[in-house]
Image 1 (cartoon, rainbow, N blue to C red):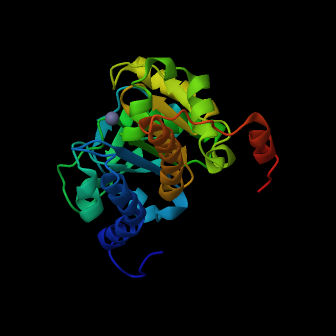
Image 2 (image 1 turned 30 degrees about the vertical axis):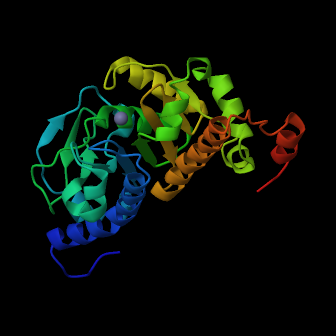
Length: 273
Ligand SMILES: [Zn+2]
């Protein structure tokens, strides 16, 4: 929605305010849950071109080289959180901490299209990982426009346990701890062994893990999740954290949680939405 008869800048600023609102509320929850200490956590949202008027898209802006080409994302627009920004600041002052960027037609550069807030702001240092995931999503799950990374304490704690650093064991634990986890995340999570963030290898392994799952756990680091909206993506992370919390609660009481039985999981699997 745009105001008729206003300048291009005003239209863009209005758009930014609207489009960042949902990112800001999710950033607030990530901070409040303790999943985004310091400048941890980043969010990107692929926009539909129809979200923006052509006048805004035509503006000239310096092209900045991407570390690798993303031909599958040529011309696409993204809202992304800025590098070194804190989620609590994204929540409080989204226009100063979120950018609108456009990938050039050949997918080799990006342009910053935001006009409001902080002109020094640059996209998250994890932009390349986010774009690798978005490029896969465009082909595999085009309805998924959101990629979110957070340091979810309960899930990181699970991957500190050597015997749980195994995709099948992790999923059996997570899906067994609560019916809603098995209902809403039936495919479970992908598991990515520990690697330095920002490397090509961890990017490739994360994309592979997310091809078949809506979330991937990075060993001893955190989670990457995809979804249709920021809220839906947060919900998925929240459900997984709930399952991990139940497991730890039982273990810290000295008990071994039973988990949902095979027949209970089967019954749940028959529920249709
Ligand atoms: Zn991280």
